Length: 248
Image 1 (spheres, rainbow, N blue to C red):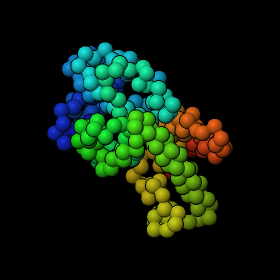
Image 2 (cartoon, one colour):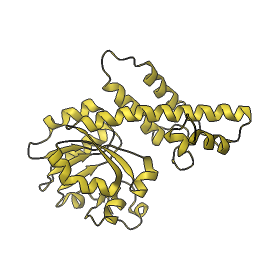
Image 3 (cartoon, rainbow, N blue to C red):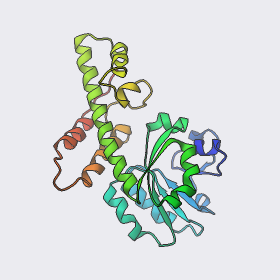
Image 4 (tube, one colour):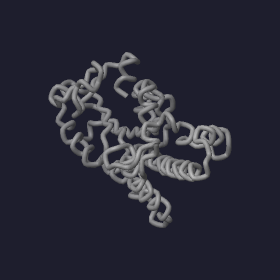
């Protein structure tokens, strides 16, 4: 995402805990004090609520900060409570995104935006630089609610695609031929169509990989589920993701 902003000519820099050598000469630092110096707009893309709390605790001390854009996928309940924890002079936008690593690298993410139109207009060039689609879903919090619902479908597609391919192996079907068939038929879905490009498509679950994040996203949706809803299928999906083994 930082690379996409830089390619668009936007003055941006990153803060990360990984070695600077991982970032191919991009303006990334491990020094939080250096990062926050003069910072006006923060886009936070971390794993979960505890990490978001850590980032916000430090960010709120940045004297020039004006806007915080939440692009992590988090519980909508948590996000909707953020305005009560943030000083009134700061603007909040929720802008989770879809597309995984492959679309982040190409600058073709899909953003689900929550905020006032005038505010979103002001920051639209950032989303245009990082993404191919921006969906304005309503006031602050609506973007996150939309994202976790989208990810429920992504989780379902992920697990059913993997199950179908496992069954196809037993039946002696060719994987590439079956994926091509699915892509042009009624079973078409994001996971099957991008199976050879999506970085976690063949992986097994670990707590720190993308499937671990997918399980966390299902749990975020469940946290904000309506009281009257039937939660059995999402709960089963979370269990299935947790038990997923690597695929050759």
